[in-house]
Image (tube, rainbow, N blue to C red; front, top):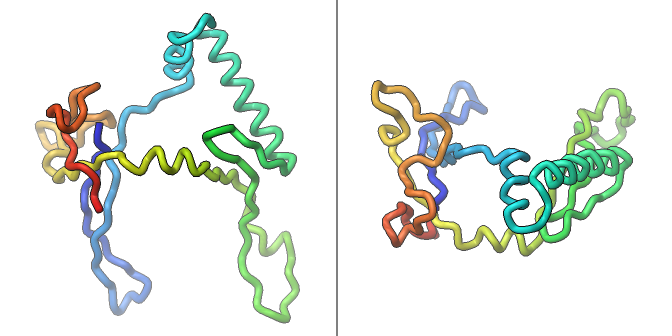
Length: 165
C-alpha cells in the first residue's frame, strides 16, 4: 500500500511585511494500529494468547519509560534507541546559563536503526487531490487508508505511483 500525501499551499510569515508563499507535502493519516491490534497480530504467529502478548508489550512500554527517565539510552533491537533529550534556549557568549530559565524541557527522542530507515527506502507514494480527501457532502474522509484495496500492491491496482525521486 502506498503512503498517501497531498500538496498544500502555505505562507511563510517570518517577515509580516513580506510573506512568502510555498508548497509543502502533508501526509494523509491512516488507520491507527493500537497495542491490542499488535498483540492480536503477534499472537497469531506463536503460542501466546493475545492478552499475554499485550501484557508483555505494556510492561515493555513502562520499562522503557522508566529507564529513559533515569537518563538511560534504551535499545529496542532492530527498531532503534529511545533516549531522553534536553531542549534549551541558546545563551549569548558571556551570559550566564540558568537551567531554570533556559531549559525548555525534556522529551523522548527516538533514533531509528539503519535497518529501520532502509525498510522505508522503497515505500511507494501516491499523491491525492484535495477533492479525493473529502467524502461526499464536502466533509473530510475519516482517518483510514482510503482508495487502496488492502493487501494489493500498487502494480496490482492498489494505488501508488512508485517512488517519488
